Image (cartoon, rainbow, N blue to C red; front, side):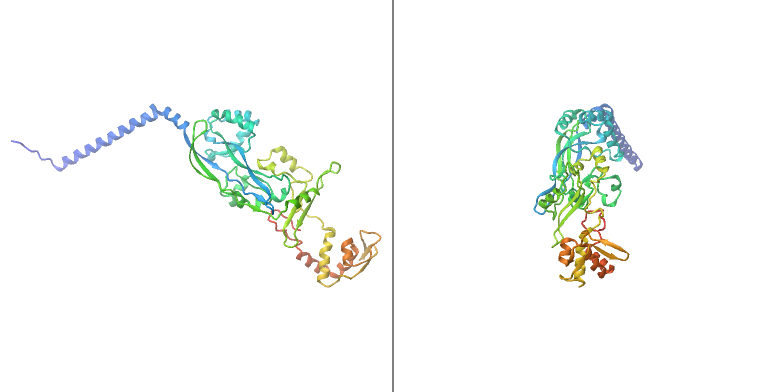
Length: 423
């Protein structure tokens, strides 16, 4: 006779709990064994595999927008250049890497060290540009040693180029790496250390327009930092174009007028050619000048010292940043004021004896013997001082000031170049 033993609810619950405990303990045992295998038994092998193949995100710099004259002739563009890049966290032996790079590029090891350390620890995983334009012979040497330089790579990037050299340099401006104090401003919140921006002239004023948008590329690299596979890519977008009112032919003519001569040296000064019909700037010259290409790849200390310490101040735009006495050019404003207020007409004459008495003092005309009888046309043609002394007094200082203001004197030119002086 079969006997069936009936279990109570407590016994069933205990059995289930025991089963669950066995399953949980078994799972932890399996997990622990696998963890031991991965970390202890296979750890070194897996670490090598991880080092040998890893994914890196490379930044693709955007070419800056091109600058043209009114006829479409290029004043500023970009050209391809081979840059030397580093990912600090990937450099296994930094001191050795710095020494090797110094030998390959003819630089001081400390230069590379300072460049890396200036980034700070928070940016050690970012790609940083060390040298932006490697000569082909240096590039070949570096490429041949990349296998022994983990964390170091080379890549093509756009570099600013000014095909006209120093021509219109003060107007177009120059570029340079964004400074630490600039990175603290809200305007540069989305910029990163090492990024190149416009630092003067139109390059600076239209930085947002010319900048473009950087892209990125995810790649698989081996232990030597060489790309094994491109995973995906977002192309960089070139910056916007800038078309100026400048006429390159007129600019060349104006520049030629200030050409240095062996016997007299540089001719300091400025010239601006304006289309009086609409105010277009057709040419702007400031001499002495400089070649903005010197700044395109990061200016070296020797060149910077030569420019910044030059007594002729070649970095200053004399056309917009300095004050000069207007001299006889002011007579044109006085003539317009006299005609507008009806003080004179075309036939109004003055006798010029070579001097003009005002108060207790004689003011001489540039032509000591005098011009004799002169009307407005002849006074302008021969720049007779006495004519404008005589009728200027009749016009009065208040009306002179009114017309000076109407012609823009005392105000900044508003050419969007920055650091403009009132004139």
